[in-house]
Length: 143
Image (cartoon, rainbow, N blue to C red; front, side, top):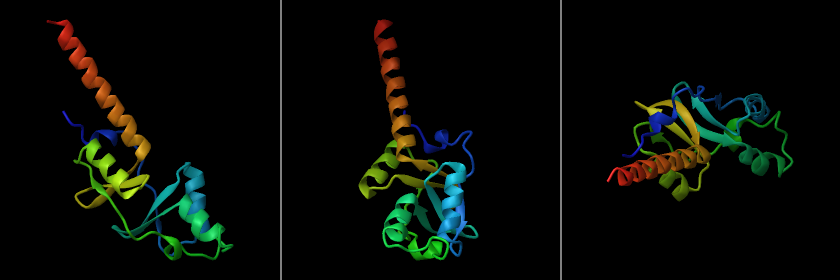
């Protein structure tokens, strides 16, 4: 049985986001405070883009820009991929692999409910495979 992403979300903290007009420095502060590397850029309930530590390193630091004077909307990635919470682990892994992304916003009824990482999905897939193997081994022992 394929597992849904919604099963990964139980007990997760709310997704962190930032306004497009905020400074990159503010985004870095949020990421550092919560030990995360990715934020969704929001305007109300609309996802406008995403910003990651990689964006900072490649678009601010590398070019000598000042994070206190650079706005999030100047460096955010507007090519957003997201996945519905009722899709499967395998679908999330396929999307993340195909698009070469490490973080994926999860939506339910078009509302941002979580952010999952590639690591989250890989761990979930491995757990699911182990459960299947254990089930099949138990079935074989019962014969």
